[in-house]
Length: 76
Image 1: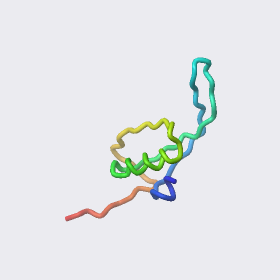
Image 2: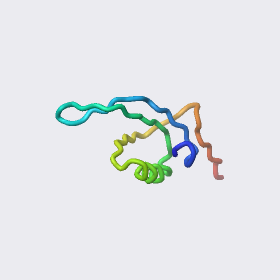
Image 3: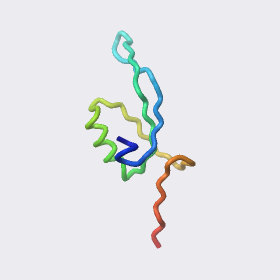
Image 4: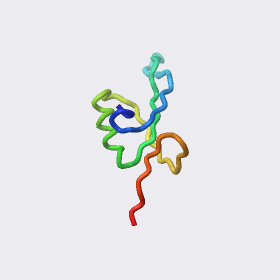
């Protein structure tokens, strides 16, 4: 969805989620992507369609290098 609908790249890590008082665990996919603040709402809507109980961490990124970075022309 992130690649096909938004044109963004992703990195997928295999992780293990833990929860509950007994320490139950399960394997999970951790998906990492970088988007603009303007794409944030669209990403959240698409994620909600797939999995409503998703744990999401958002952090500002000052700069990126390499990969699939969208360039917008400067307006003069």
